[in-house]
Amino acid sequence: MQSKDLVQLAEQFGSPIYVYDADKIKSQYNRLTNAFSKVEKLRINYAMKALSNVAILQLLKEMGSGLDTVSIQEVQLGLHAGYEPEKIFYTPNGVSLEEIEEVNAMGVQINIDNLSILEQFGAKHPNVPVCIRINPHVMAGGNTNISVGHIDSKFGISIHQLPHLVRIVENTKMNIVGIHMHTGSDILDIEVFLYAAEILFDAARNFKDLEFLDFGSGFKVPYKKDDIETDIEELGKKLSKRFNAFCTEYGKELTLIFEPGKFLVSEAGHFLAKVNVIKQTTSTVFAGIDSGFNHLIRPMLYGSQHHIDNISNPKGKERFYSVVGYICETDTFANNRRIAEIKEGDILSFKNAGAYCYSMASNYNSRYKPAEVLWIQGQGHLIRAHETFEDLLKNQISLPSEVTL
Ligand SMILES: *Cc1c(COP(=O)(O)O)cnc(C)c1O
Image 1 (cartoon, rainbow, N blue to C red):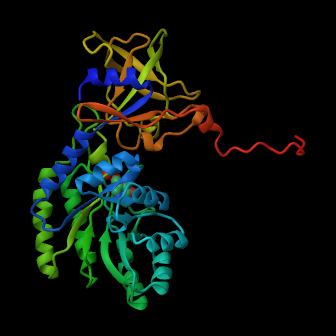
Image 2 (image 1 turned 30 degrees about the horizontal axis):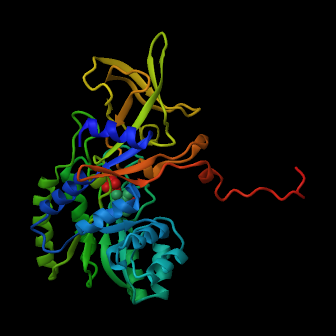
Image 3 (image 1 turned 90 degrees about the vertical axis):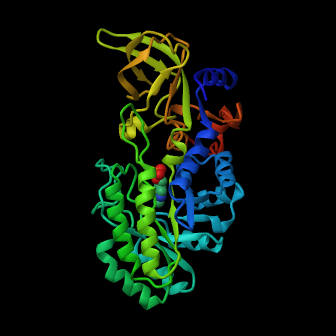
C-alpha cells in the first residue's frame, strides 16, 4: 500500500490509527511456508500476542495458520475467531495448574514450562498429550529484555534439568507428544538457531512417542535502514534438511512447528498520528503528536526505532526532529531524526507497527486507545472503533452514598 492510501485512511477514520496491510501478512506467511516446503508436515501457529484483533486472527486462519496463545483469554479469542481447538497451542509461563487444566479441557494442546506443574499435571492426567518447553540456554540477540533462552531466564525447563524431567515423565507415565523451545525475539544468526535446534533434537531422543517439534520463533525483521533480518530462505534450506534427517533417525515423520508473531505482522502495520505542535527550543525541534507510549510503547520499553515518514509532505526537504508524545512523562519516539519538513497538522506514519504495538496499548493519561483498520483489496475496513468516554468508565463503580469520604 502507498503513502497516499495512508493519508486518505487517516482522513477517513481519524487519528491516531493503526492500519494493517493484509497482503503483507499473506506474503510473509507464504514466504515462511515456501522456505520449509521440503518438510512434509509443517505447521505455523501465529503467536497472537503480537496482534490479537479478531479480524487478523481470521485472516491468518484463512491462510491455514494455527494459533499460539499464552493465556486462557487468548484461547477464548481464538475460538471466537473460529479456530478449531486442535489448531490452538497454549504456551503460557507462570500460570496456575487450574488454568492449564481448564485450557486442556477445551481441547487445546498444552505446553508446560516448569517441573513443578509438570509433575502435578502428570500425576493427575497421565493420558493427556503434553508438550514440554525446554530452555536451551542460547543467547539470541544480546539485549537481555528479549533473550529468553539464557541461564537466568524464567522461561522453559532448563536443558540441564533434563534427567529430572525424564524421571518425572517415567514416574507419572505421562504422555509427552512434543518438545518446544522459544529462544526469544531477534535471532540474528542462523547458526545460533541451528545450534539451539541440536539441543532440541538431543532432548527429543529421550521421548519415544513424539508427534511434533516446536522451534518457537524469534525471527528478526528489519526496523531501520541497514537492519539485518533473519534469512528465512537460508534457514529453511538448512533446518529442513537437518529436521528431515532427524525424522529418519527417530523413525517417524514428525511435524515441524513455528510460532512467529513479529515476522508475520510487524511490517504489515502502520501507525498514523497527527502532529499537534512544533516546538522549537535552542537545541531541538520537537514534533509533538496526538499519541504517546500509551499507544506505542516499544521505543520507550525496548529502545526500538520505528522508521517515521511524514506522509503529508513526503517530498519535503529533510530536517532534524525529535518526535515526542503527549503523555505527561518522557515519551520519545525518535531523537533528532531526519524527517521531511513537518508542519502542524501533518500525519506521521510509523513503520513496523503491526507487532506488539496495539496489543500493548493502554489508557494511561485517560486517553482513548486508537482504532484499527485492515487494508484489503485496495480498501480500508474498520476492525476496531476508536474508544469513547464510556470505555473509560466501564467497570468503574461509584461508591454508595452512605459511604462517607
Ligand atoms: C511471543 C512468543 C512468540 C512470538 O515471538 P515473535 O518474536 O513475535 O515471533 C512465539 N512463541 C512464544 C512462546 C512466545 O511467547
